[in-house]
Length: 431
Ligand SMILES: [Zn+2]
Ligand SMILES: [Zn+2]
Image (cartoon, rainbow, N blue to C red; front, top):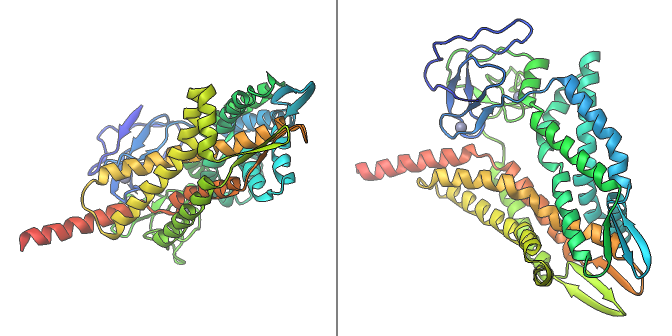
C-alpha cells in the first residue's frame, strides 16, 4: 500500500502503534535523490512512502524479521555447495560426457590466462551471495553480542546489485542453446539447487529492509522541526544535522551536502568504460577450435551466428551485451553534460533515464557468464574447444566501470543544475 508523503504538514490521522513495534514519529526527511525536504507522516509498518517531488521510494513497507532473514541465510548456505559445484549442464561431446558447474567455469577462465575476468565472474556469482549470507549472520550474531553493526549495514546497501544469480541463470539458458549446435545437452543436478538458491536470494534481497534495520539497531531522534541545515546521509538515509565531527549521527560517515568529487569520479569511470568498450567490441570475445581450424567471434558476429539458429536468444544477448552498455554510456554522458550546462528542461525524462540504467545495468554481465559456462562445456582439447578472446576482459571492465559511474553520480546535482538553469532562464526573461 503506497502513501504519498505530505510536503507541508503531517496528516491529521495519528496511527497508534503497539509498544513492541516502535515506529518513528512524524518527522522531516530529505529525499536522497532530489534533496527535497518534506514531512513524513507516521506510517504503518507495511506502508511505503514516496518522495513528493521525484517519486523516489523513501520508505519500504516490506520488512522481514532478523530471525526470518537468518533462516533464509541458513537455507542459502546449505544450497550453495550444491549450486556451485554440482553440474548445472551435462553434454555428450564426441562420445564423452562433460559436466559444467559454476566454479569449474570460473577456474577454466583463470586457466586460460585471464584471472581478472575470472575474478569478476567469481565475485558476482559466488562472492556477493556469500557476503550477503555472512552479513546476515553477522547482523544476527552481532545484535546478540552487541558488536558494531554499522559497517555491515552500510555495505549491505551497496551489495544488492552485485548478487547476479538471476542473470547467471539466464546465462545457463543461453549457453545451453549455444552448445546445442555441437553436442547433446542435459540439465544437471546442480541446476535445481541453483534455481532454489537464486529464488531465495531474490526473496531475501526484496525483504531485506536496510532502512528499518537501521531504525531497529540504531534508533536516532529524527528531525521534528524543518531546518535548512538538515542533510540526508547517503549511507543510511537518515536526515539530520551533522555531529561535532561533521558525521552522520546514525552511521558515522561524513555527512556532506553533496557527494564529494561526484562529477570527477563519474566522468573518470565513464571515459574509462568508453575506452574499454572499443576493444570489447572490436577484438574477438570467443574463439572456437574445430577440426584444427580456428574461428574467432566478436560480440556482434557471435550474436549474428546465434541469430541463425535461435533469434529470440540472439535478441536477449544483443540487448544485454550491446544495447545496454551503449545506452548506459550515452545516458550517463547526456546526464553529465546536462549538469555542466545547467539544462533546465527534460529533468523528469533524465531522472527516469537514470533510474532505467540503474535497473538494467547489471544485465550486461550476461555474456561473460555464458562464455564461462560454454568454456567448460566445449572442451575436447585438439578436436573441439571453446575459449574466450581478449575482448572478454575489456567487456567485463567496461560493465563494472559503468555500474560504478552510476553509483558515484549524485543525482541531486541534476536537480541543482535544473534549479540554477531555471534561475538563469528567469533572469534572462526578466531583462
Ligand atoms: Zn525526491
Ligand atoms: Zn548515515
